[in-house]
Length: 280
Image (tube, rainbow, N blue to C red; front, side, top):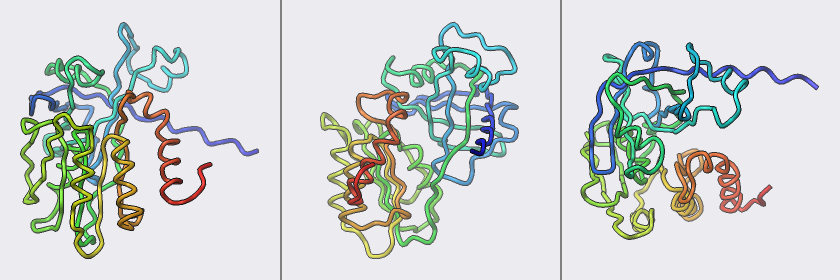
């Protein structure tokens, strides 16, 4: 049996907090800069993301930091924890990377960090990754997501040429969570209130009178409503798989570690169910 090629070590970048800004009651912006971004770029996809590395409390890793060595030599409980965030903006002239964080007080890991982050603080991360950008050849575009998808939706809308045909639905907790987006596309802000996450989005997309022509759709957010919207678009509306960027960024009742561990199986099962094929 041929040996598998050695996995290429993933490059860990370091950056420094330049400034922070409270955008809404539940959204915090952190701008990163520094020499560690000298060869960084994130300008081909509008859903570019990075994986921030958070060290366990009390961890003191030697410099230069080597993630592969940490994972080889230390027990798992001492490994850095990763949290994934969309690149809201990349400024190649000033070499500044903007990330927006959904926050819920002291709940979670990355949100509380973003609230406390101070200029000069060092941040390590992997990336960028990314796979989506609006297809200029599509007749029209559809965007649907909750707060977690807002940075990617906003960046996508801002990348569209003037006059592009697009419908954008963003579900947030209330009117205080709406944001200014530099686009001539009118965003339909859906206020969740006490309703379950994604219910308003499902109603809105289901009620949309789909225009003629090929749609290129971007649908991301909580896994359960994404599942329902996938059925609506793939099965009921016959949108091709190639014209649909769709994924659960998160899942109710799971932190990112738990969700990422089960996400592949969840997606495979949903796809098998909705494509009419037996699950493996």
